[in-house]
Amino acid sequence: MRRTLIAGNWKMNGSLASIEALIAGIKTGLSEVDKADMAVCPPFVYIPRVRELIGDAPLALGSQNICDQASGAYTGEISGAMLQEFGCRYAIIGHSERRSLYGETDALIAARFAMALETGITPILCVGETLEQREADVTEQVVGEQLDAVIERSGIESIGQCVIAYEPVWAIGTGKTASPEQAQAVHAFIRGKLAAQHAEVAEKVQILYGGSMNAGNAAELLSQPDIDGGLIGGASLKADDFLAIGKSA
Ligand code: PEP
Image 1 (tube, rainbow, N blue to C red):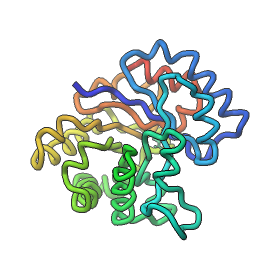
Image 2 (image 1 turned 90 degrees about the vertical axis):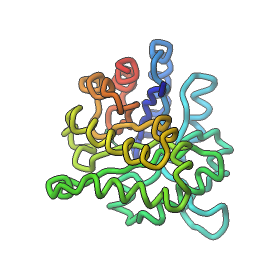
Image 3 (image 1 turned 135 degrees about the vertical axis):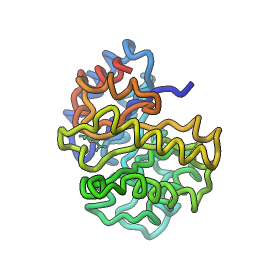
């Protein structure tokens, strides 16, 4: 039985004051979330402070990216070893904003993924199609290729050590959520594709949905058989909304 994971992607939001209030708010309601694991992924600079604020609360910490190299002359990058020092369990990799705004290719994402695993950090690998691609009916091809880039580099068994987040680009930050049926169809495609290569990996891997998930639509999305949690952007910045999503698992 797969556990539900609700992970908050704070993106480039917050301040020292606001993250303190946000973590305090989340901590007050965590004991009522009994059927989901919760995680937050703050901007890099806030990771040490968030680590302190979490203390021993059952709230995991993640980063929003990770370098594909171990150390050295890579200005602006953060290594897996550094993230490990601050107790990061997860790293979001291949978010559509990294792909589209910062030109991260499938090959670079696969290299970042490999380095996360090498340093003991669980990748949250984001895949998903644009609206244009959905309308051209190539969603499965696009998502399949994004997965294949990682599988070709790290092998099918590496997928058993990661979390996948299906995030249709047209649903991210737009308030337009995929319907539970639309999301389930792509999640089932992903699991089926993996099952064709390795049944155990397919059965084990958590596949999260991301794209305008909120307190109002989470329960229906999370009730789908192949949706094992959510990667939450906007709604993860409000403690009550984030907790409500966790409670609806
Ligand atoms: C995201 O950025 O991963 C995301 C799902 O954002 P939002 O929930 O705001 O659509």
